[in-house]
Image (tube, rainbow, N blue to C red):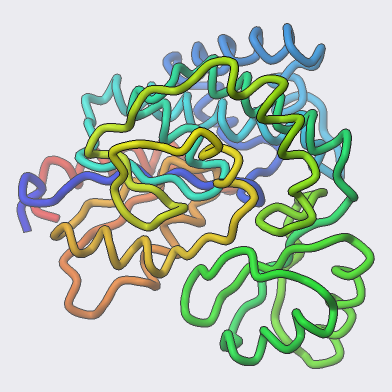
Length: 321
């Protein structure tokens, strides 16, 4: 299929997709990416006293889950990827973000500026750290929803995201999550603990809502989305966002299965994953039907193959995809 017949869709991922050193090869070799990161670094330093560049590329640690770093870091990385796409002349027909990825999606759609997205991510992190109990998220693989729900009820946890038909993300306080993890091991169920220190997409995150909304967020309203903006929260295009939209995207359950079904209904798509780890590309891939004519390309990987992937992207845009 001709590239011109495919709708280009930018994909952005959220909490859990981050890791130390993400984007390092681009930071070292792509001036556009590095400049964007330095701009974000200066802004984050001003608001948190911490250097994002230092934390990502020069300070090696075993654990990378400080929310005051990871929350704005994911936004900054994805904003830098937006700038790289602009430099390459790649313009999306549609923009889709999942969870915190909706912050960068908002930047790509001019709903707000990159600095406003970073500011809100920082204030959101501060509110969560201040009032929420420690928690986390676990990805459960190769299980049906019907087999997972009874376990969640048993351990007082919540279904955070339906990713594909046999892949789910579970969220809750640490004490419950630890017991659940032990049970998964006993039952020999495949899982992965995500590098997240708080229970996103669950009621346990709600205590931070009031302080976040009324102390910072609502003081600067965002613009209306264009018809390019596809909500990962509502699984469809929106022409207006609720006042608390950028709180709901990190606190309410998401359903990637429904979101991909909606995007596929728009016609053949060329999905470009601009998140840190390629998780969105993977989820989209396994949600496509056999009859789909869509194509997928991820840019960033934990294996530092971004330069190769950008070359692949350019080749795909020049040829039949």
